[in-house]
Image 1 (cartoon, rainbow, N blue to C red):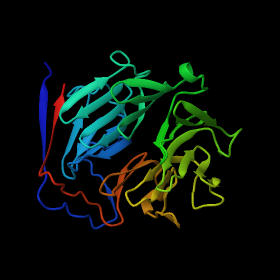
Image 2: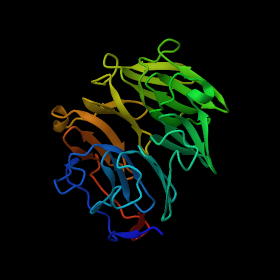
Image 3: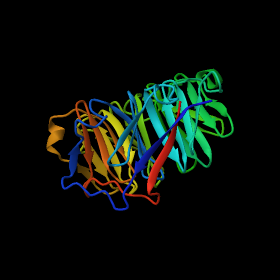
Image 4: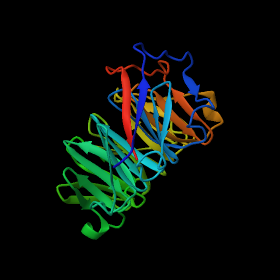
Length: 328
């Protein structure tokens, strides 16, 4: 029988106050100090789940709680992705997939499921199907796990999938260090610098906007696939200060945010805007994430910057108490 720990996050009935400044350096009391953020997702109760390479951190705007292999059934402290749909959380690690449904925790690995690898890089959900990008293939999960695209099944060159997204026509897009793949109904296609306008074969981020355009972040520039064709952006023809696109994020207002090592750029469908903060000039930016409160979490080599042009805020949701049970 598993032991359980009940964690309570008491949220007052008022909104957490906004900070006066547009950016906030998390203080030394934060468990995020000197950690690299790998994922952020917000649940129905307003609790932020933050993945790092040294554990899973829950934060409600005032209090922190760290989960790891010692105080929970997390299969690994290296968190690679987090996806939340309704009350179910999918947490990908280097040691398997943790699924939390309500307060039931279950870990899936290569030993107790048909997962081809324990390294779960990305998870996306569409129409009741969970799509999982692993280091050994693309997997679908509904009632069981099924490998859909891999070296063994499809004889593709690279099945170590790094990026994952789903477009408006239910086409699956996955990125590797050897090209971009599209997949639907057992039909796949690979795009590389040799047969397409991709500027580089290292695909690190894929985001689909509301119009169905695919934004592809690579090691050497940004590519956009539209119904009309391809568009390419780099330092020469855009506000990008670096061609190395570390991450792309879409917010709830359908704005796109592009993170490079030298700065953050946003695009609202009409115009581009460079985010100017003095700290950016001194920091090397590694990643960008956006929570459900429109706060931007910007990771650098030495700091975590919390940014929101309207003021950093964490709101109370319908539920007064955030609570979850940790299984171990």
